[in-house]
Length: 269
Ligand SMILES: Nc1ncnc2c1ncn2[C@@H]1O[C@H](COP(=O)(O)OP(=O)(O)OP(=O)(O)O)[C@@H](O)[C@H]1O
Ligand SMILES: [Mg+2]
Image 1 (cartoon, rainbow, N blue to C red):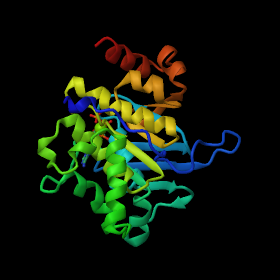
Image 2 (image 1 turned 180 degrees about the horizontal axis):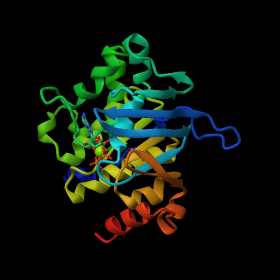
Image 3 (image 1 turned 135 degrees about the vertical axis):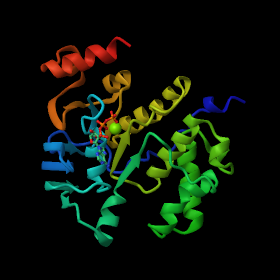
């Protein structure tokens, strides 16, 4: 059997809360006047951004523009020098239990899958719900199997990560993040380390999540995905948000010279 073609099982939606109410948008992520330096490098410059419930934001921009750093500040994997970040209205705490609690609201999927190599796929997905959410093992396993089915890898549950393809591992990483029932999912170039034939199986899962109403911030160079799934595109360069707009506006009518130059480079490859 070609396991990468396993069909995704239909079951109850993963996303609680459902689609945003357009008449009453609720900001789930807010960055206000966020600045950050790495030594003398001013890596985030007065970043102001709100992402509302159910919104899918795609962040694009040249290498080194601060996209990953911005994502990492949102669950405080990186500190900021000034400004404020709120998650669902709550200020992001500096440390301690409150930080752990808010961090659990934000699922993160990176370029490298970071699965625990010495644990089975099932254990990778159940670990945090058991340890952090104190979920009984049986419930955590039921949830994990449901999520693994949703991303099309339930038959891999007893294997070790090294026995899976890159695309399968990345889908497990998504299931693992979803197991914490996050309010927001951050994706930082989740397909850029994958062989080309595995990119779509991961993007399909992301599109499905977006359609279910998950609030998502995605750094990606997959422009097909961006056009299809994004509600809004943010273009970053040199640590600043230079443009933001609907995908058709941004791709068809970029305003700044930097965005035009960036798009001409990526779209010609
Ligand atoms: N831990 C760090 N210490 C010092 N400088 C860093 C650190 N992390 C990133 N930088 C620098 O900060 C800038 C922004 O990096 P970042 O990784 O956020 O960019 P990016 O837009 O995600 O780029 P890419 O598209 O290549 O992933 C770069 O100049 C980078 O070299
Ligand atoms: Mg990056």
